[in-house]
Length: 474
Image 1 (cartoon, one colour):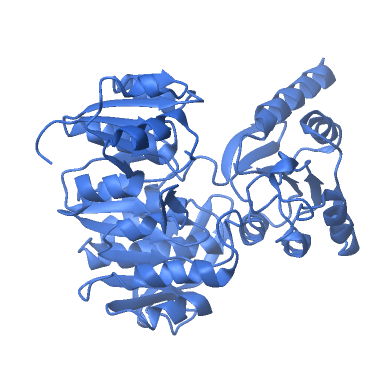
Image 2 (cartoon, one colour):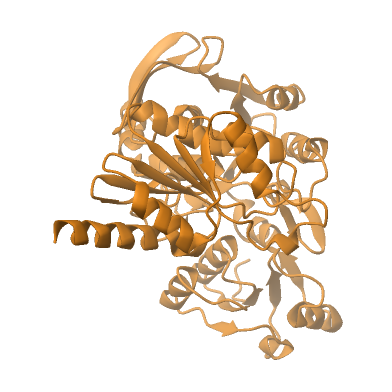
């Protein structure tokens, strides 16, 4: 792909699409894009890179005729640009297919997959390998704190990819990660998710099975020893398999783990041989497992123990992954992406272990395509056990759930109360903010959980708490 092409990206403001646009530009191609919703942070990144973004979709955006059109997976039939591409027989491809064609054939891709923990693990790995001087390329579905972007084209031969099991495009229903030519694969876990495109856990497991089937013999598969689905997948691998976990039977195990508000420390064992005492500022058992996967990959590619230890210790975390948004009047406000019951439970357990004596408010917005359905109605009732107070927001865009298959907030509150969890559904954002302002006390932790913007509830809560504090002191 040495010649310079004109490449146009439809729905360019998605995280992955925007990252791809920047990488294609850095290769010397002329890159343009279009999107319906052009807003920060991606609009800022694209404008800084001098990539023109046309607002709205129109066949006119394809004049002059591009050499290649990359169609994002948010685009459906009926989109005027997609229709014009098909009518005019303009060469087109999905985002993952374009990544493969332009960047992956001459690199060694490391694909981080799983239902939970992909973004944090990918970011942690990119951070550790960058700090160790390997200068990897990476595409992360989030932005590490302190980095301007979650994507970069490095000079090294490793390319770290957050591997999503979501489909590639309206014309390619394969999971994105099947395009990524994996050299090494991490599978954090396999659970049911994405109810808008998968009907069952078996369908999801089949996508992962196909991924495992294309890891070369000299590659590596890493996964938790306690996850039966991952171990069933590993039994079909043609490559080496490294297990990780908290038990001594794993290839990589964490023992003597200690938790405090500043982070987590553990003794790392490789096949029962003590290798290092490692620390990370990330909280919770799930982040210990993420770190074990990172260690396995880093050692596979020759990173020294001192470099691994320093990388893990300095990793600042990822925006929206139990990110501290601020502290007002002794109340700490967190923003977290958790929306699956397993992730909700892991987040609350992490906070509970880090500072057991503090009261935790869990404020949850059912928003993702799976969350707004009834698939996890019962599972959510048991996911909040480690919270002291739970506030449930209304279902976001409930009409997007199929009729008769919509999460019931009332049922969820009743289920939580039945388990002895103090739960309520006060109403929308303003009512929740009022409840928190009236009842949260110094020493409390408020964790907002949503995979979307949640109506700016974080800033609104902190503003209100500051006003209350000023009024009291005045």
